[in-house]
Amino acid sequence: MKKPLIGITCIQANIKGKKVNTINDFYFNAVLKAGGVPLIIPSVTDEKTISEYGKILDGIVFTGGHDVWPQRFGEEPIKQVVEITHERDQLELVLFDKAYEAGIPILGICRGLQLVNIALGGTLYQDIYSQVENVGGHSFGYNPEEVYHSISIEEESIMKEIYGKDTVHVNSEHHQAIKDIGRDLKVTSRAPDGIVESIESTNERFILAVQYHPEAIAPKYPEHQEIFNFFVRMCR
Image 1: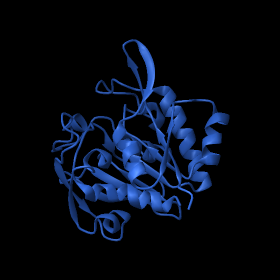
Image 2: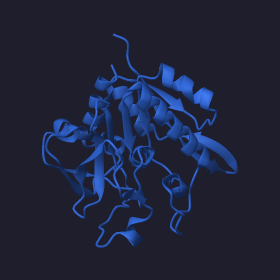
Image 3: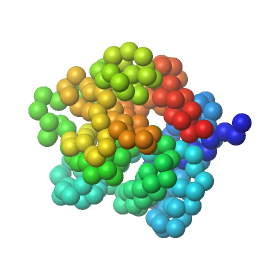
């Protein structure tokens, strides 16, 4: 049986004065372990080139990284938004549209969840620590390979099918979160403070997106590998 080809988007950064596209090994290791063939996608901006990815991919993982430009959801940036990458925004929003139109399965992780929500007309809290009352801790950045807080999972959801229980523990490394949910999406889990931790599609398209980083905790906590196993099965 042919293994599904899974596109994985990159972080765009400047390292020692050089512009690079890079990705954490955890992402492609999780896809490989799930039986997929990872294809790393750089931040190209030409729409014709992006369309070619839509023709060959069986699934797409939108990964974590810098903030999406707030103008993409109709807001001026606040001072806590300090890192944006316009080229990556362009790639991912166009690629999402191509994949959505073609019915290609989509998995979003951290920024990827936010990107999916914006692409379908939703909005974000640009900084939960200044914009959300009584918010808990969500920036456990010094050890992404360890769990940090719990999430509560909704019944009748892909998340419940994957984990098989109402509560799981996850890592956390973000300062933004979903404010208004996008069209044809539903919230399927939340942190104890109400922050959205996962969303999925309400129509026939397969979309699953999580605010945490299952790829980083999967080696130590194998239940989180099941997100990638489930996703890759949907791409076959």
